[in-house]
Image (tube, rainbow, N blue to C red; front, top):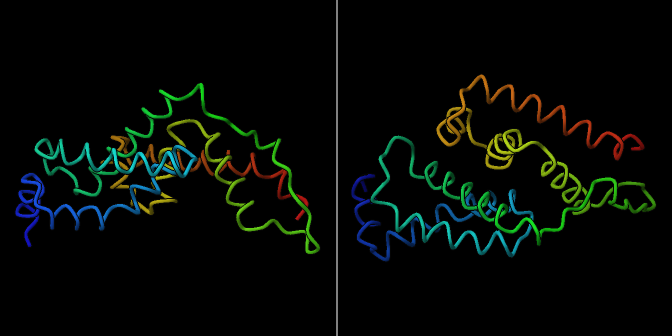
Length: 178
């Protein structure tokens, strides 16, 4: 099926095309929303909003980038809007407040590690966090990140370098005992 035919079917709201579109993209959209909101329920709600908005605005899709890239851009924008609109109700856990439980092998459990790393990522400056999430969580190439953010590839490289350095600083105290 050609890309244009598929997009035409989506614009016409054909059920099969919508099902394929959602099935092919829901995991990436969910991971994007979760990376920004840090809350599974909020991310799930946002996933629905992303697809609704995308289907409503599909006639504006110009084809400059892939349909997936365009959709991730919508997910990022809606996630950032959600965070801005809900700042007062969000609970931000400081990394220094996280209690690390000792077990007999003195290793963090997988879920505890994920939580600590997620909270550290959330502490990155917005531009660094955005490119870090797109590169490491969504495995997007620098070119795809550039299409989504509008940043140059050299800016993306620099932002990723600074993000990794900042994450090292945030996590060093937690991991120095291991």
